[in-house]
Length: 165
Image (cartoon, rainbow, N blue to C red; front, side, top):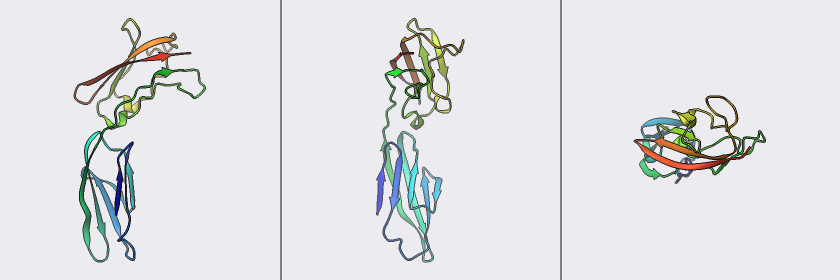
């Protein structure tokens, strides 16, 4: 039996029919080897269509346990409403959920006049915005700030957040 769930990350587990033999399991996502010899595969996948395969090899044969599972995952980008950079460990940084499922994520934080406060050309590999100006390194004033997120092939999300110090 193969059990698959796909949010927030891909989880697949195989059971049954593997007893009594030395089995080698090989999981692939979109043709890339991601796990060997585990009955469970848990991995991040990209937003959109994904192909997963499992091959089981034992002393009797080498055969695919299933040819492919093709599934679509839709994890929308979620922007929090508030940042409170007070150092207490709660909402100290802008953490945008589900960006790991998208490619080419760029984030801009703008003040109420449209001036650039902070930006990242590769948001997934940088820490979130900590409520400081990228130019001066000083904390921004409390208030409303605008978030512009560009990702994929030209898709854009515009939203706002409140900053309380």
